[in-house]
Length: 265
Image (cartoon, rainbow, N blue to C red):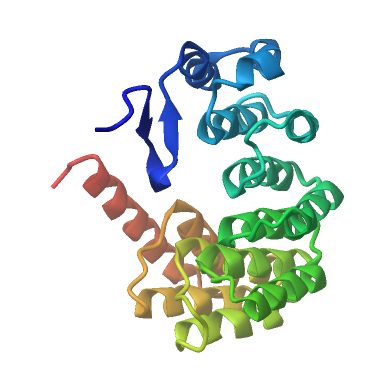
């Protein structure tokens, strides 16, 4: 007979059904920062599972934009013996640090997972890659991706798209194009998606290579990837510089997609 005081959430991690756990889930969704932090005390957290705690740490990062305070809370909770020493809690904080561009803190937290016996997964590594991409640190991003390969951590489309972003911001559009073409040809673990192609097109345009941006758009079509508004905007910008009549095609595609989305036949 199952324990009526808990039920299982995603990944088989149990949610507790205590008063404190229910309050934690509620505050993670709509609580103020001070309400969340006031709940992260040893007396309150003793009746919470790792899942509720990771939700609250994630809320401090995502809803309140305070990843460094979430990192402080994580370290404090660890010192009190709260169940936060797990991939869920670490990744929640890593994601916040990555979005905020806190590279040194994200790198240190990722490295510390080894020290406490946690195996960092793809999401944890991708969080750091996102931070590196924002600062155009493509060499560090490539080194981290190689580290993932050596450790057997799966690399997904977000992993490689972050490298494309990093290369593009550093002005290395040709290196980014080689990476995307290797994805297209099946030489890497995953195929590019529309975000990957858009990142490459943006890199080409930033380096004043509109013809390369147009070629990337055509490659995307050949792969059967449907362009989104950003990709079409890049294509239209490239067309204006290289082949203005093609710009009308970009507008037609955008108009057709808009009509389909709105249910207009």
